Image 1 (cartoon, rainbow, N blue to C red):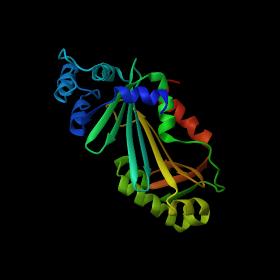
Image 2: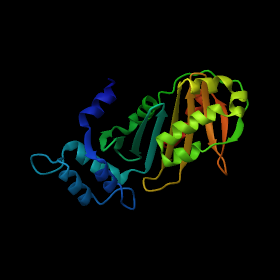
Image 3: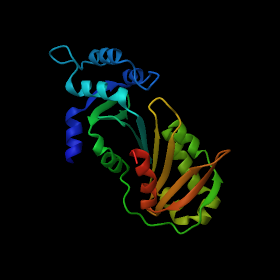
Image 4: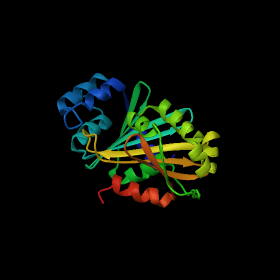
Length: 239
């Protein structure tokens, strides 16, 4: 376990998913501090003095000052992962959703890029040899809806389309062999739905950058790892 992972694990606490939804329901992405403290104490996150535990207090203090919400979503055959990072203040907060529970931990802001890198696990890949192409697919809508079942079904359907098979046979074969992951990254203000979006398909045959067009159309672009990171870095930092 890395040093940052060990530190985050030591300070992590869990709350029921409905409680977290209530906490982030405020107009600025977070309810008033006193209301947040009440909810967290009700979850058993109170110390001996009646105040919040250090980790819960750090999160309650940090979230109102967060200026950016980074939503990371990873999909692969049979599973998915959902992580939110609240950044832009003196303290960052990492939130991972797992069924009925949400794991929350304060993390050092300077380690956010490392966390994103570890979560995406995006290393060197070969480059598919084909030109970009445009086709109709419900994939981007499935990503917007965060529907893991529809994402997987859409990726498999994408790989079976004649246009895909003809243009990028090795990528299609990798998808059909379940050798794929799909990463989605979106940044915005905590209570907003706009902002920047990135989606990429990571296969053993290479990386594909997915670009959402109008009327259910999607552009598939062969990409190198550094090209994906050149998009990600400005999205998650203040540069």
